[in-house]
Image 1: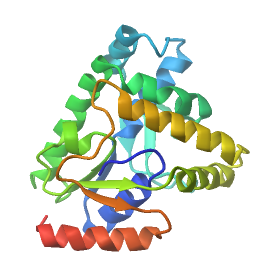
Image 2: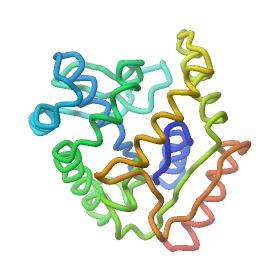
Image 3: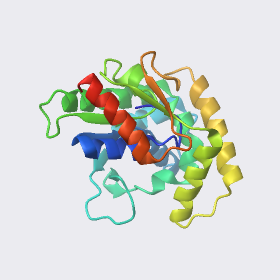
Length: 229
């Protein structure tokens, strides 16, 4: 499942995985973790070699949320430190596109993501399948996936969602600022040279503007059952 920022991938992907009993894996978390670590360690996010070396050595662990009651979908540890909500900071939001555009970063993380995807889709893992979400799953990570979904929504709708998410956590960021950030990130992600944001040729496009999460999940479940996945 691919799509731009705040298009509903995490919310829909998690609900879908729960309904199917599949593993939910948001690959964007890994790029955010590398970005957070780069900023925290003073590494220039424009330094492709430095960011790539960091991605290869960073210990990123993604765990179930456990007993957490703060609305998290998972707990993210970077070198043993819980940085789950730090990954949604403005600094990470501003720089994650630049970090994820580096070829060495994408190569290191794509390899890990592909291994996870293949292991959990072969029926030999703890769960019978996997719902993997990101920006290049259908085009680069798992191009052979039996069902590919591309979620989208209008930029203002996505800005409203992100604004509500931040407000729920006590952060006051203007919707205009968020909207501008989303437009800038869309342009950057879609034009980068390595694995640009775009739907796979055989992906099913779903515009979630004005739709409830339940309605989107119901539609995708119909596609899942039709595809026999």
